[in-house]
Structures are given as C-alpha cells and as structure tokens.
Amino acid sequence: MPVAPLSDGRRAWARRTPAGTLAAWLGWLALVALTVFCWRVMTQDTIWSFVRDAPAQAADIGARMFPPRWSYFPVLLKPLWDTLNIATLGTLAAIVLSVPVAFLAARNTTPSAALVRPAALFVIVASRSINAIIWALLLVAILGPGVLAGICAIALRSIGFIGKLLYEAIEEIDATQVEAVRATGASGPQVLTYAIVPQIMPAFAGISVFRWDINIRESTVLGLVGAGGLGLNLESSLNTLAWPQVTLILIVILATVVASEWISAKVRARFG
Amino acid sequence: MLTLSRLTKRYAKGDAALTDVSLEVPAGQVVGLIGPSGAGKSTLIRCVNRLVEPTSGAVRLGALDVTALSRSGLRKARRRMGMIFQEYALVERLSVMENVLSGRLGYVGFWRAFLRRFPQADVDRAFAVLERVGLLDHVDKRADELSGGQRQRVGIARALVQEPDLLLVDEPTASLDPKTSRQIMRLIVEVCAERQLAAIVNIHDVALAQMFVERIVGLKAGRIVFDGPPDTLDAAALTAIYGEEDWSRTIRDADDADEGPDEADEEAPRAPRPAALGARAL
Image 1 (cartoon, rainbow over the protein chains, first blue to last red):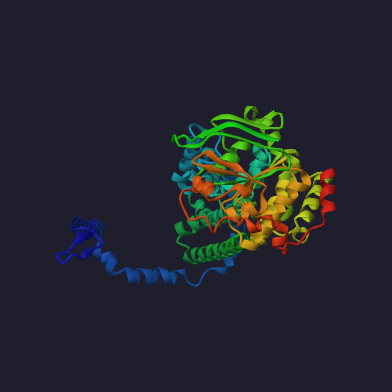
Image 2: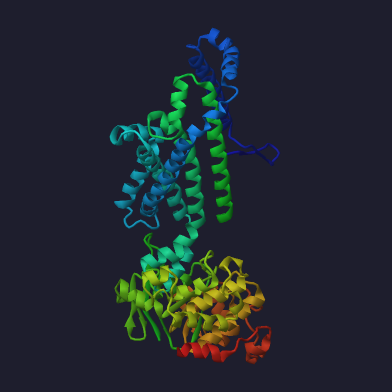
C-alpha cells in the first residue's frame, strides 16, 4: 500500500511500502555479497606469476602467428567446402524434420494437446539441450569420423532450435484469418496452407537462414572431434604448433562467417 | 432460408452467451443484429456456421439441419454460408486474387488449391465478383497493400465467390470511416438483393443499421428483446436493448424516415450489375 494518509488530509505516495524498500536493499546486498564470493572462488587457484607474464606470452604467440602462411590456403579449400556442406545439408535436414515437429508442438495446430504436444516438445528440448559438438562426439563414435557425422550432428542440434522458434511463430498467428478460411468450407490441410503457412513464411525464412548462419560457425569446430571440415586442420595445426597455419585458418573462418552473416541479413530483410 | 430454433450457447466457464434464440430469416432479407458488447452477437453468427459449437437448439439452412451435420457435411454446408469479418480477416500476405479464390476452397481438392491451379470456372467467378465490388484493378496486389474499404470489398468478394445462400456479417464497418461504412453497407445490401441472399449483419451503429436494413433484431444478454422494422425501433426499444440513455439523437426522425438511403448519399460508385448477375448464372 504505497498510498498513505498525511496529517493534513493529503495523501503521500511512494513506489514501495517500507517493507518493500527494505527487501530491495537486502536484494542488492545479496547480489554484492555473491559477486565478492564468486571473485574469491575464481581467483583462489590462479597462479599469479603466470597471469603477470601473460602479456609477454601473448606477444610471443602473436609473433609466431604472423605472418599467416598464405601458401597453406589451397590445402584449406576442400575442408572449407566440407564445412559449408555440413552446415547447409545439416540445416536442410533439420528444416525437413523440424517443420512437422513445430506443427505438432504448437498449441493451435497440434492434433492432441495431451499426448502429441508433450512428445513434440520433448523432441525439441532434447535436441536443444545437447550441444552440436557433443552430438558430433556421439555420432563420430557411431558413424565413424567424417562429414556425415558432422551433418547429422548439425541437423540434430538444429531441430530443436528451428522447431522451437517456428512453433512459437505458429502460436502467434492471427486466429481470425484462420477462422475466415475455415468459414469458407476449407478442409484442415487447406486451412493450413492458405491461412497458417502464409502467416509464418517470414518467420520461417528468417529462422532457417539464421540457423544456417549459426551452423556455419558451429561446423568450423566440429572437426576438432573428427566430424570433418576446417576444424580437422585447425586441430592438426595446433598440435604441431604451426601457428602461421592457425592464423590462416582463423582468417578463413572469419571470412566465411562474415559472408554467411551478410547472406542471412539479406534474406531476412527481404522476407521481413 | 435460415431458421434458428431455441439456440443456446453456454461457454465452459458457465456463462450463457445465448439463451433460447429463435429467429427466421427468409431469402433476400437483411437482418441487422444490434446489441451491447458482450450481448452474444458474434457468438450467434458463429453458431450458425458452427465456428462456435452451439450447446443446444438447432440451426436449419433451408431443409438442412446444420447442427446435426458430420465434419464433411459441415464443410459442404459452410460453402453455402459466406462470412464477412470485422477486421476483414484477409490473409494479409496473399494476393487479392488468392484471397478471393480461397472462397472456393470448399469446392476444390487439396492439391489444386495448394498449387493454385483453380478450375477456369472458379477464376471466372472470382473476376466477376471482383468486378462487382470494383476491385478489378487490384487483382495482383497483396491484401496488406489495400485501404480498409478495399480490404472489406475483398472480404465481400471472398464471401460472394462461394455462391452462398446466406451471408453472416460480423461488424463489417467497425474499422471504417463513416463514408466508407455507408458504401460497404450499401454494397452488402445490394448484393443480397441481387442474389436473393439472406443475411445477418452484426452492427453496433444503430443509425447505420436503420439506414440500410429492412429488419432489426435486438440482442441483450443472449436473448432477443426486439424484432421489427427499423422504423419501430424507438427510445423504449433502445432502452430495452442497451439500457437507460437519452436516445433522442440516435434514432432517425420520423420526418425523414421515408427518405430512402439511396437519396441520402450519392457518393458510392456503382459497378455494372449485369456482369454480377452473369456470374451468378455460371
């Protein structure tokens, strides 16, 4: 009750009650205490002599990394192609698999809110809770090393991402447009294609290309666990301390990601 | 044409939206349904095509008992009932033509509709109704590029292309300016006369209703409390429908009651009628 009567008949107003003010201050105090505690945990195992000469170490590695070994570039073309394929094919597979899952998960299109919807939501959560690199570790063990494991890892991780964002888009559509098409005597599948699909197309295009963009980044590291692509070269270069090659690989990754971001932004602007 | 007998709708929470509503609308008659917000006007017209399932009572379209129909029977019945909506309810990202052709979805199969390969006869019908509502120049535009009045014309075209026997019209002018409102109401009344359609028009503008419809039904708290020609809607009737208020400025004076709506304003462009009648014959 932030409104309180004053002695002269007017009324005072405050944002919080006195108890609320006290609770807010205690909340801030707890936050400060937590920060101090975390700092202590973070620093107790730090060897400070190592931290002190960090600038010298960084300068040393930096000096070894330059100039990049440009002659290594032709070797990277094949892994780069693999990386793009892993990202693109993985995204396509994820789109094919996640669209039905999204329709089953959306409250307004699911055939059964009691049975099918929880199952679809579980698929989405399971896919999202496991990082692509962990999927890749599992799949390299199952399928053996190579591009196929990478594609499957990307696809399995992306189903949850695309499925979740798409089902949220489906739930946000304008219901009166659906009602209007249903009122013409349209069948269920016709209502889906005429009233629902046109409404979610911009979201669908944006989500898909955004995920593809993320997958380009993720697939550059999948090689670290043997799932093909640039990561394989990165790992072997790091292991042999070939710093100029590492530099070149990082430059190639950066250029690829910038290009994919640009394409992604263009597509989203077009469908926005 | 349309007969409602003791129609009742009770929502899950127990609120009675409609109680024992009985109403008969002959072919060619336009009924204005008035009443305060929450009186059940929208529920009533949605119970007719079962977008809302009535709790009890019957809806008959001619001899057909709509309330007893199976899913596929209901789809066939809905083809005979065109619906026009308050906020137009067009599929915004589809073209005008696609929106109008969606009125034929009940007649074509899934793949034909999906691939947008409608039979030529349906395309002919669509062009004919677009000409009737005066939108032939906008066929290829996307629905969200049109003005409010144009969108509602698309909504009317979508309903007419179904070749319905009945129009269910939910607040057709609620988001339109006064002049466009009159044009839209006039268009609805004219096409109903041309095609001998029965129509129920939900409307909260009492003066507009009096100007255009030939019969007014007043709904209050889910019950019919008034049913009669517009001229008999007096202050007492409005009080029965809406509650106590000074109604003297709302109702049309008895003096200009005989002045027809057509003389009252001349702004509406008239599309040639023979084309529309020809479309009906297709």
